[in-house]
Image (tube, rainbow, N blue to C red; front, side, top):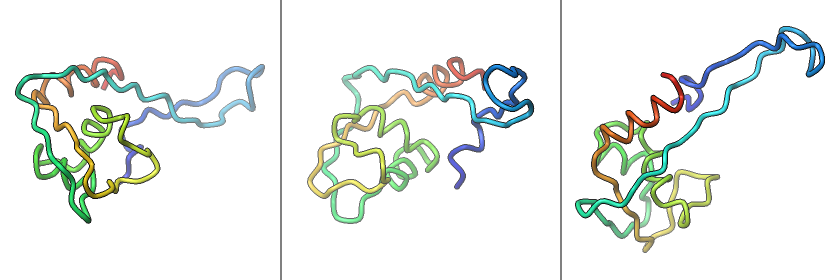
Length: 107
């Protein structure tokens, strides 16, 4: 899984910034995910990972970032693993979340 496969790649055209033609990744913007009364709450167990939970709830492991964004206060952002016993909010309404993401990133 390549987490950068949908991140736009640009080429520098400004001599004042760096060498011409140097490639760089664009910034990915993640939407704010509002609370919903229908959100699901889970307590993690040993071995739980964000990508596995995304596959379980959204049928797509690439949506791990939705769960991470909704639970930013519980995330370390350097791993997909979550400590056992952590309460996580699994947002519902994945369609509107993905639409907000796509609009913010022009995908």
